[in-house]
Length: 166
Image (cartoon, rainbow, N blue to C red; front, top):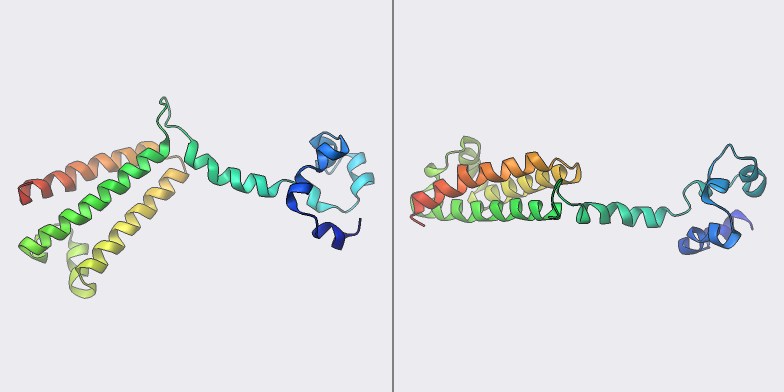
């Protein structure tokens, strides 16, 4: 089979190549193995025959991994953090409408309200926080993410709820 002909073969057929040939993956995926060199020559594609399957597994793993010592999916922690961020944005918006921008305790946000507007600043700040939480989730820093969620609840949600009389 010529290289051009091989490129036209669907990836699913390539992933089943070991099964069709009756070979174990180690016999044709290790470069130092003599059978690999004789059989495939310069077939560098055989080093990663199931790249499409591995790619989908990479995205599937962060969604199904469980919290350590628990049966709770770790994605639940990310969803909880996101919900806390949305609630904080809504309470902050309500507080600013009721008391003005001077009520914001974060000086960076208060200064940004003047330059970029309240909605844009709140949206950007919350999207940035959720993006950082996603990075923590993908890197399996679940303890840090859970501590940040609790800190947001007691450092932002509870004070806003108290001030707004909710």
